[in-house]
Amino acid sequence: MSFCFDEEIPREGTHSLKWSFRMQGPHLIYSEPEQPLAESEQLLPLWVADMDFRCAPAIIEAMQKRVAHGIYGYSAATPGYYAAISNWMQRRHHWTIDPDWIVITPGVVPALNLLVQTLLRPGEKVLVQRPVYYPFFSAAQNNGAGLVSNSLLNVAGDYRMDFEDLQRKTADPAVKLAFLCNPHNPVGRVWQHQELLRFGEICRANQVRVIADEIHGDLTHEGYRFTPFASLGSDFQQHSITCTAASKSFNLAGLTTSNIIIADPQLRERFVATLHRNGLLGANAFGLVATEAAYTHGESWLDAALAYIGENAAHLHAWLTQHLPGLRMSPLQGTYLAWVDCNALHLSAEARHRKIFEQARVYLDDGLLFGPEGRGFERFNLACSRHTLNRALQRLVRVLQADTG
Ligand SMILES: Cc1ncc(COP(=O)(O)O)c(C=O)c1O
Image (cartoon, rainbow, N blue to C red):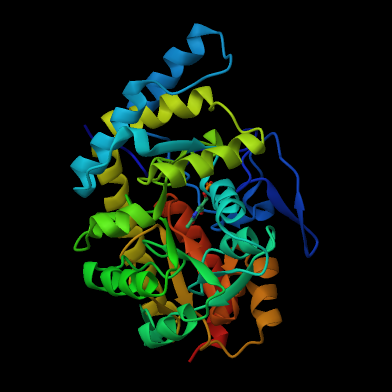
C-alpha cells in the first residue's frame, strides 16, 4: 500500500495546539481560527512534536468502528492490547517483555513526574543530559528533586556522551535517578549499544536507577538501529524503567495513552500505588484502540513515514548548505526533530528570534529551551509536508540570508 505524506491537511478547527498560535503584532496569541488563514497571516509551526500527517488507515478504521459504537464509558485494556505492545517490542526491537510489566499512564510526561514522586525523597537529584527535552527539568523540579546535568559533548555537530563527567556526577550519593533520552530529543542521536552499555554500567556502579524515555524509539532512520536500554541485559532490565508510547511514531499524542514498562514487580507496585494516590485509574478508550491498531497493523505506514521524514531531513540539509551556509544541522539518526546550529549568524539571540518569528513568521523551538547548551540553536519539526517545509525555508532564507557568510 502506498501512503501520501505530501497532502496539505488544514488543521484549523481541530483543537490543534501546534497550529492554533498566531501572531498579533509581534506577540504570539493562542486562538484557534475556524477557517484556514491567508498565507500572509499564517505562522508556520515547525515546533511542538506532532506530525501534520494523517495517521495510518488501519488506525482510522479501528477508531471509526469504535466511534460508531456510540458508548464511550470507562475503559480498561484487554489482553489483546498488552499482547500488541509486547509483540511489537519483539518484532521491531528484538526485546522480549512480559505483558504484565506494562502500566498505562496518560502520557510519558505525567509518568516522569509520577516516577520522581515514587522514587525520590526530598533533597535527592535527577541526572539529565542537556540539551534535552525540557519537561525532564520540570518533572524533577515540580516534585522537589534537584537537577544535575551530564551535558552531551558537541563534536562538530555530532553529539556524544561525556562518560568521565557521568562518572563524577553519579558519584554524588544524592543522584538517584538518570533520565535517558533514547533516541535523543533534540540532538537526534540514536544511542549505540556500546554507549548505552557504558552509560548503564556507570549508573549501576553508582546505584543510580535509569528511567529510559524511549518514546522516539520507533523513529529510527535508515542505517541506525534502536536498542532499548532494558534489552542490554537482565540486570539493566530489572533496575530500569522504560517509558514508551505509540503517540510520537503514529501521531496519536492527543489520545494521551502511554505504556510504562517495569520488569521488577515491587517497583511496579510502588508506581501503581502512586497512580492510585493521584486518582489515575483506567485509560482513554480511543487511545487503547489506536495504540493496539498501530502496533498490530501500522508498520508499513511507519516505514513510509520514516522514509518521507528522512527525505525532509536531506532536503533541509541541502537547503541550509546552499542558501544559509554556516548553519549546521546535526545528523538526524532518529526522531523527526532536526537540530540546527545557528551560531554562525551574526545576530544576537533577540535579533534572531525577531527575524525568525516576527518577520519570517516561522515557529521553531529555540534551542535555549533545552538548556544553556542549546544557545544559538533552533529545533525544526520535520513531520510536515514538503510544501510546508519549503514555505518555511523560503521565508527563513528571505530574512536570514544577509546575516550569513
Ligand atoms: C522525549 C520525549 N518524551 C515525552 C514526550 C511527550 O510525551 P507525552 O505526550 O506522552 O506526555 C515527548 C514529546 O515530544 C518527547 O520528545
